[in-house]
Length: 293
Image 1 (tube, rainbow, N blue to C red):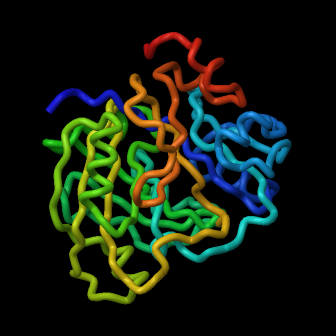
Image 2 (cartoon, rainbow, N blue to C red):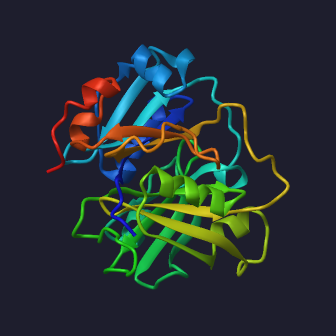
């Protein structure tokens, strides 16, 4: 398997019904710094598929090292479509934290606990909690204690905290996996595993397992693909609050598709310094950024 030309994950773009309360909640939960609000650039709104949100108030949240972590775009018309476990597309953002038990204990109001910290089925070296965020998005707050072969994961306390896995809910694991491999993903694994947060949401037996695939990206990032078959519509057409897209670096133009077969929206970025890419600049302007440090 060749080395991935895709990755790492840079940031997530969220649609927020209002910025006033959500910005403060994210700052307190993740120890990030908020830039002053700016209007969303028209060219950027078109590129994101949010043409009608040109000039909408937008706030960048950055890690202490200046790298972008989240972009919040105010969308007063975004609907509450319910928890993302019930619909296809980006289902969860997995964020590296130091001590997950400590982090969960001090989460501010606006976050709702779904599953307390527990060691994962895939490896006891990974401990995670599941929470819903202020915009209705699902977070896996994850502590990685040591290397977990064959995956290339960041280690808590060694690597910077941030989003390192995007989790997709879809109807066809193999089709979604093929898309990410064609886009430039590296090694990939397919297996069945227990996903407690989905079992609880769908009121299924807690030991129920799902077909899952993992595609390794560069920069110790991954895409996780969870195949879930139920009676819910495959796609929610109305614009929902929560995760709109994930920004992912790539060093080739293997695909121009900005929506995966499983309805996950992607913001393709040229490989470059993540702190510099977090702005309202166009693709052309971002492409002038130098190579990764």
